Length: 143
Image 1 (cartoon, rainbow, N blue to C red):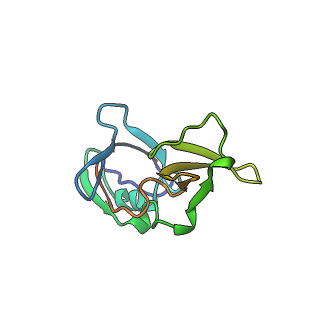
Image 2 (image 1 turned 90 degrees about the vertical axis):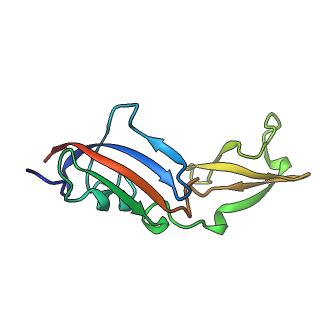
Image 3 (image 1 turned 180 degrees about the horizontal axis):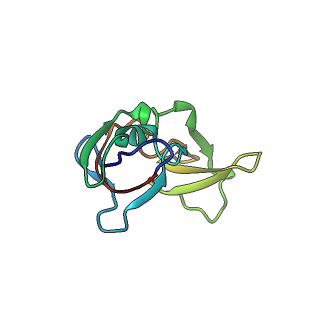
């Protein structure tokens, strides 16, 4: 029976949980996730965790933050004066914003704090700094 290896196309069902057990994503009620191994499409710890799994095999993978979305980078948390925001924006904690770098790259931000004259935004991935647990089942392997 074949096992998952680099460059295989793989279909998996998964449920992703935070350390406190809260589910943050799952494919169980949807189509299985399909991807090609070794293409950098997924976090490294997920790909490393399913290497050598067989079709219909189930496994729980615990991924430390450095193999998931990395540690929280303080330089990605910044205060932005209100006069730099578009006038139609009424910022609220948890609101998502998009900023554009001088090079034209879009950056996803989340409002962390609303002050009188500024907001604090965070450009880290929402799961940065978190250990993640995935319950995984390999559905198909196409070498």
